[in-house]
Length: 126
Image 1 (cartoon, one colour):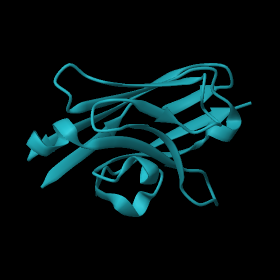
Image 2 (image 1 turned 180 degrees about the horizontal axis):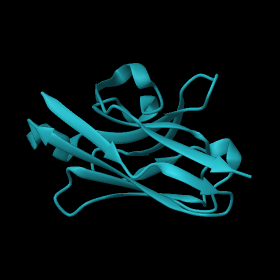
Image 3 (image 1 turned 60 degrees about the vertical axis):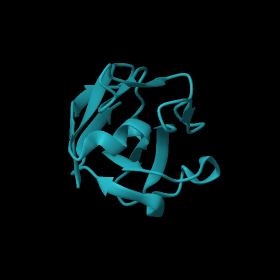
Image 4 (image 1 turned 45 degrees about the horizontal axis):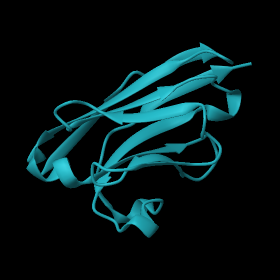
């Protein structure tokens, strides 16, 4: 079992920045080569893909955050960071960290992730 814990959410104004963290614990040996991904769920809307680090290699972003968000993994590879700059009100959502082993073409499918964190709220006011 792998436990994921997110932190770093909060309330900011448009244009400001936040950094989210996701730390894995438990049977983390598999997370070194797992895909670690951020999803988010805006209020009243369905969940959506934000960014993924595919099996500790390349990183992929949703078009809506490309150029503003930066995904990285910590030195021990069990921590995932999401640096969010130039935040917009439409970035308001609960952000979830997920771990799994989808194939590259399916990294945006939340159904293919085995482990999820509890979520952290990000609120951006205009």
